Amino acid sequence: MSLAHQIVDFLAQQQPPPEPPPPTEIPNPSPKAPPGWQRILGILDNVKWGAGVALVLGFFIGLLVWAGGRWVDHHRAGKIGTVMMLCSVAGAILYGIGFTLISGFAR
Image (tube, rainbow, N blue to C red; front, side, top):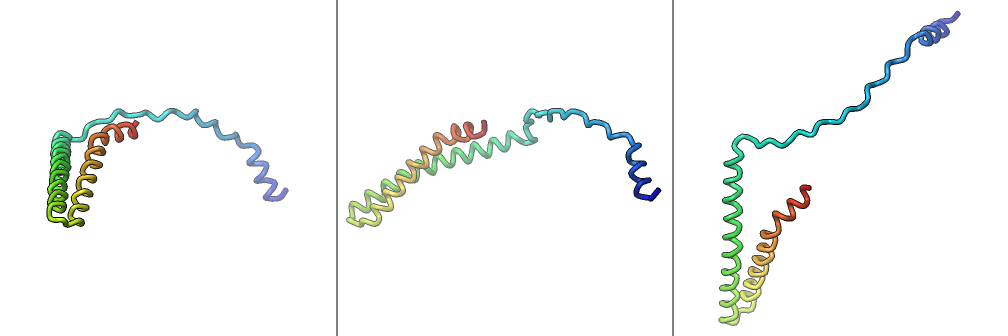
């Protein structure tokens, strides 16, 4: 008998490997706040407050630039003031619906 036949006979006598256990579901851990989370929220509150102030200031400064540009008949300044006001209004809309959008995407 050749070596190849002996190997095949040896392998034929071996037991098949045991069946793997059924897969188990991976547990979903609940979120846990990191240490210092209150400071992080304080910083985010300050940033949110600053963004609100920047939007209001941007609108009123844009209004002043627009009015000044129209007053002295400087059309470019009038356009810049208009763009500043429109950007402030668009930013305020995003500021207002941002939390709802992020919450909706996070679900």
